[in-house]
Image (tube, rainbow, N blue to C red; front, side):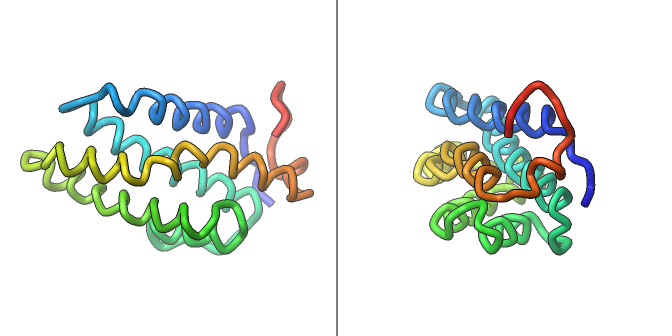
Length: 143
């Protein structure tokens, strides 16, 4: 079992929560950054959980979420929502000069509930998983 800093994990979850709360107000470059960081942050948290519980090594961003679904961290419906938004990562990192902001915003709005529910799903997983106490370093927060 690898040590994962609980404070960093909680910071990332709070970050995702903040991005979803502000989502409807962002446009243009702020929208791009928000969408990109939603994807990166959920995958980062997923990798932290995978490392903590020594789950199989993921081969892609989507594979991280597939593992999270298989281990009961996220429900299958949410994984489908993540899959739909992860398609934008390539656009955000490779085709950034030709982004269709309207289409991207619509896509993320349609699937934003998975990001909103992510923190609660992670907390529910920790409550049901006894290893969480030893997998994550001590800090001032309870997970």
